[in-house]
Image 1: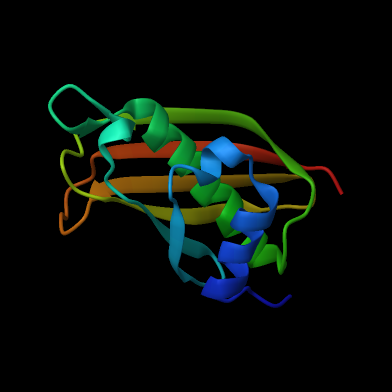
Image 2: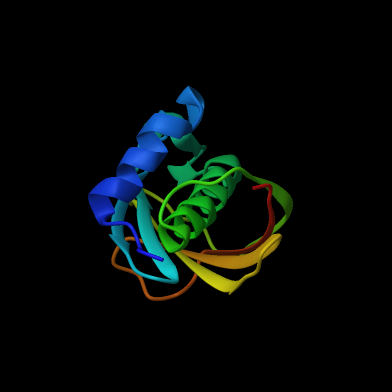
Length: 138
């Protein structure tokens, strides 16, 4: 199967995700056969008090990054749905973009398992970590 380019992966996001997800400004910065890196740009309207990007924006970003990683690995978006997602928040992302590194752990015929590590732009320590299970519907 052919993996998608960054431009093709971004087109999948732009053409298929809900307007409110796209309004987060998420964009693909790199992709490969089992990984996708995306960024959520810092914006005051995504923040809670003190310039900290809210957990809801980071969780939406993580789910989106894992789905785009799957689309990249499958050569395009196929019908799938999130079965389970778990988030662990370790430190804030404040006044900086959030970088999301999604990785496919297993891509089966009917289920896929992914992880997504989130860190602040320029940082090396994880700010949050997500795991997701996805049902592949077709």
